[in-house]
Length: 181
Image (cartoon, rainbow, N blue to C red; front, side, top):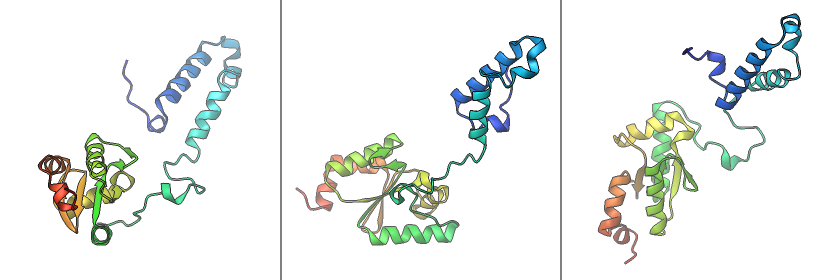
C-alpha cells in the first residue's frame, strides 16, 4: 500500500528511512509480553538514537568550522541586492560564468560543457554557483532575461548559454575574442 510521506521522514535519507521502518517492524514482531521493552531493545535503540540525531538540529547549512572557500559567496537577498551583486561581478571580472556547481564539480551537464569549453581555450574566468543561493539562481535569470543556466558574461556583456558557447567554440570565436589564433 502507498502511504504519503510524513513531514518528519522527508528529512531522512532513503537508507535511514528504510532502517527505521525495518527496526519498527522488528519491534512489532517481538513477543507480546515484552513489547514495551522491545522498543528499547538493542536492535531498535541504535536506530532510534540515529533518528533522534538526524532530527535534532538537522540543518543543511554549513558547519561553523567549515573553510570559507566552501561557503556560499553571495549572501544578498531580494531582487535589488542580487542584481547589484551580479552587476558588480560582471563589471569587476572580464569573464564570469554563472553555473550549477563549481568548475571542479559541475552539477549539470550543460555547466560541465561550458567549463570544458572555457578550459579548452585557456580562458581565465570567475564562476558563481547558482545552486548555493536560490535568490542568485532566480536573479541571474532576471538580470540577463535568459531562462537557463549556465550563463556566460564577457567584458560585461551577456554572451549566452551552453548552446551559444558551443557555437562560438566551433566557429572559432573564442580564439578571436581572447587573441589566440
